[in-house]
Amino acid sequence: MKKIILALTIIAGFSSCTDEQNLMIAQPAASFQILTPQSGESVMLTPANPTNPGLALTWEKMSYESPTQVNYSVEVDKNGDNFDTPVVITSSTNTFATITVENLNGAALAAGLTPYTQGGLDIRIKSTVGTNGDLPAYSNVVTYLVTPYTTELPKLSVPGNQQGWNPATAEKVASSGYGHTDFEGYMWLDGGFKFTAPNAQGNFTWDTNWGDDGSFTGVLKPNASDNCNAAVAGYYKVTANTATLVYNTVQTSWSIIGNATAGGWTTDTPMTYNSTTKKWEVIATLSTQAAPNDGLKFRANNDWALNFGDTGADGSLDNGGTNIGTTAGTYKIELDLSHPRAYTYTLTAQ
Image (cartoon, rainbow, N blue to C red; front, side, top):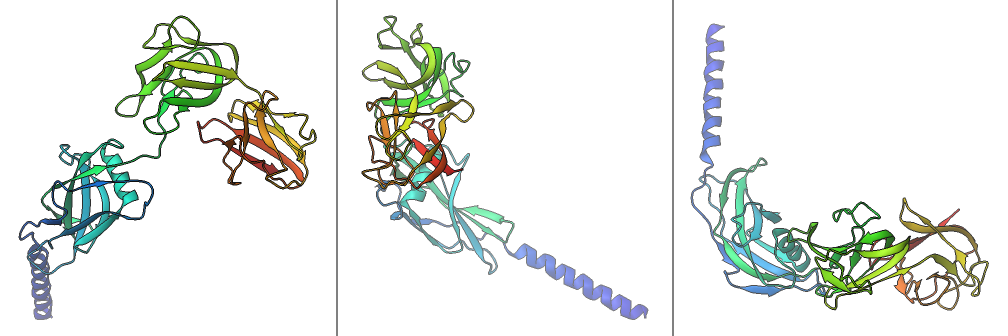
């Protein structure tokens, strides 16, 4: 019996040693290189074709000292940042990868490149083995010149007496496009306010701000000591142009109108502002009316100077857009103007 036990112990020990040897066999044998693209190649990205290829990568196979499956991750970072916070854009067991325009653009922005400005995006491949990412090794680094885009509209914050003068939490106004300076938004105001721009990190602070030039005639002044002013507390359309240095406020109250409503096209049905949800709302009984000729619209101050419809019937509002078609019933109708230049509405059956 002792001989049998001794034999099993020897076998177990031999098996353990063999396992340890197997674990130690897999070691990086050499470095590996990115084959394409070459440093200095460039691409200009546009949102027109987001699924098109934006980057075609190929690289050498990383060699370990024993046959094993190698996992690869493509890492990128802003040129000069030394991969202190790398962005992983794809992982694969192949030695090639095609990155779409949309994914490359997102990675470039996440790495810190500036929209519509060519910048260097450093690329490297990380290789590992096993499910735990063991034995990491890295390829050489190539610098790909990328001009990214953004679909995010530039914004200013509007801190003021209405919310405690905190730029970080203030309501926003948005421009009509990247590089444009025509800012617009809707919000509750109560007394003094200013406009502030985001810093390089995208945070709204007092570093860059505009107030009134002291004439109180709608003229902006950078870093002014005087505040802009909404003398009467209320809900306003706010516009500002940081190039022409003008601003304007129009106090508004909102309603629905149309032949789907009880008042037809002659009498507005007023809405009430909900300060918690930051939406205008009303419960109304509607009749069945088909767009584009019939239905309802939203308008301010019982006038057509400011009105919204829904061209395309997609739930988003368009200035002066198509009438909103309706089906008979009682609805809670909500108008949401709290997201600048992305105005929406809902009709919820009651």
